[in-house]
Length: 107
Image 1: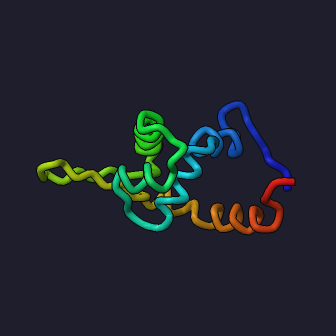
Image 2 (image 1 turned 90 degrees about the horizontal axis):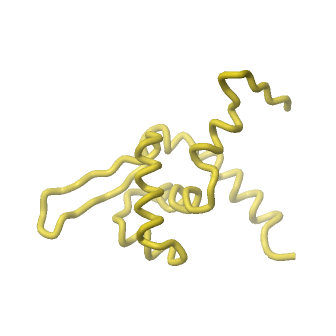
């Protein structure tokens, strides 16, 4: 497979700019299972700090991969879900899981 990059665009760079770090991938993987609250995401990814989780969720919102819904309740209820653009990554995650099961683990 040949990847063609022009001065204006490179699909690999563009994709990695959006999802190219471990926290983003772990957050997206959790949201592939459905809508989650902040606390559920934090519990599912215990190594991430609350500050980093907040930063990454904001980045994912800006990229249009995640939507944030705030419910007017006391205390406030906030949920995160994948957008259609985020859900379009599902085949990519399926391939990552297949590759990880085959080649993952520690040497």
